[in-house]
Amino acid sequence: MKGFLEFVPGDSFLHRMNPIAKLASAFLIVAGCFVTDSFVLLACVLVLDVVLSARCKMTRQTLGLAKAVAAFSLLLALIALLFSPLGDVLVALPWGYIGTGSVVSALLIVVRLVACAVPLFLVFYVTKLTDMANALVKVCHVPYRYAFVFASTVHFIPVFLNDMQGVMEAQTARGVEFDQGGIVNKARLMIPLCVPLLVSAVRKTDSAAIAAEVRGFNLRTRESGFKEYPFSAGDIAAMLITAALLAIAVVI
Image (cartoon, rainbow, N blue to C red; front, side):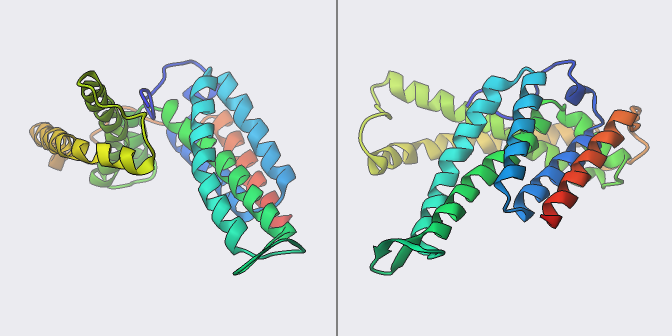
């Protein structure tokens, strides 16, 4: 998981976009994916995901994210398949049946989650968290403390994942085999990792809180930041296109 949600430098169009325009466009795409049942529209969004990731030179990260989201969505799809009797009967079950509609619903869950997850996560790969937080304060007038909490939460996700990876590597060097056994055995081996990870998390958050206090966190206002975040023609065009995508999703 190294590199997850960590900023990747670049000079693509997405890198140069206004942070608020990126967030707004991503959320419009996500909303469009959730209001539509059209596989054609979702396929178009998937093509857009591929194009955007290629333009940002982040095909590897996007592919890894798509695999992780697809694996998670398969569980939800299985639940929908077994417990949502829709359409013509394909397989009879003691508590119901698997129908044609059940299969369509399960496929829709997987495609929808993958399609909407990629643009949302790409935003964090192509945007510095400081820029995102400051833009929320400057442009959207979000109180700085809330923008700081949002940015800090996203920042600590890869930090904690890297810590977990380090602890697992240390345990592996001592002979612990995390790849052996079933899910129960893996869960049993993961439980002892919670203590050092919790201690590390408390230390890091405490250090971050002290550093923020020393730097005058409580004195920050909307006027404290020197950097401005104007909207370009490309930013407006991106938001209009994604808004049109949402409108099409609602109509069809």
